[in-house]
Length: 202
Image (tube, rainbow, N blue to C red; front, side, top):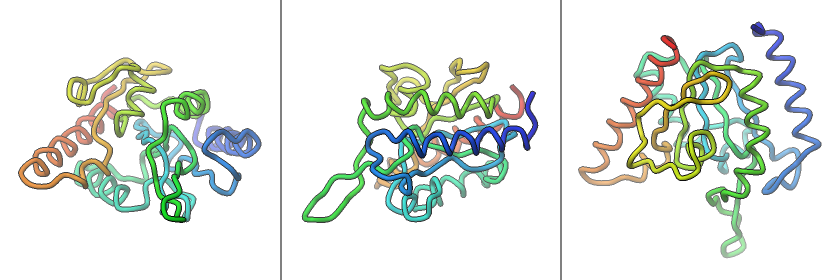
């Protein structure tokens, strides 16, 4: 088993490799958003792709979605500093509308292109548990035809001996309105708590 220092060195080499191996939608190395957190973690959270705030700060999940995610982790008794947070696609996918760059969802082709890099990252980390935030991450790590309505909140076998659980992307949780909003928020909270238990016990 690698210790924290050994993993940190491998992760730095991984970062340097990505800078010279840009994939769509990346256009420049400065736009890369790497994973961050504790390398020797039991729990890794995998989102879809960075957004505008993440691109600006060079850190994953720092916008409104990230704030919700970190609050939910803390409410479940999980310190955000003790996990590793990353994305399948490491650059912000955008579309130009009225002369302005706006966020868009990453395509499945983009996710497939980035998946080998994500697997390299996970091979270094070797977590006990992984939580997929959103359908695209779940399709990449669980099964290609994954449906959140059927597979959310359930454990699945994952890479490198891990166990994987899928839940909503926090941006989806934030978009809900009316009575459904509370239902989705509670399910999201329960899934995060379950992932934390899985990360400690498995």
